[in-house]
Length: 161
Image (cartoon, rainbow, N blue to C red):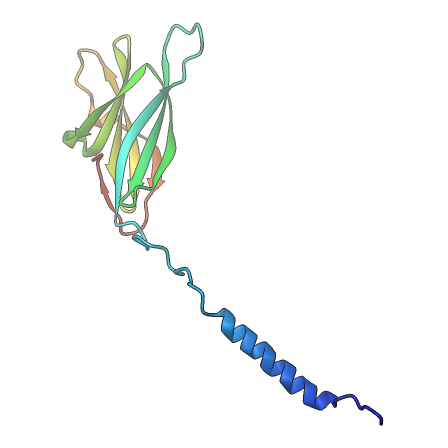
């Protein structure tokens, strides 16, 4: 008696059906969500604040400070932007409504310094520098632009919280 091999035409459909059954059985596990949880889309607000670190060199007679502007969105995501290095020790002095500043920082040494004002613009924060002298009233017309920082379109810009 001669044994014949099964026809290839009969074996292929059986293998194909077995493969489909195996694939279908694998789909029963738990899947992870495809969208991240929490707020998505563009930021609705940007909170503005100044910060400073010492930039003084050892043995220098005049202290110097490196100033940066931080933008924080409602999700807590903060980005820091360099403003510059200024003579003196810098301190946050809060909002300055007379200068339309959401927040301000003063860098001061030996009776002179600068005030830095963060002013809201259209889709950006404009940092202005105002020279100040001890005993003299600052001249608002003496302000100079230092830098501009873009914010997400449509975001409300506000001072520190």
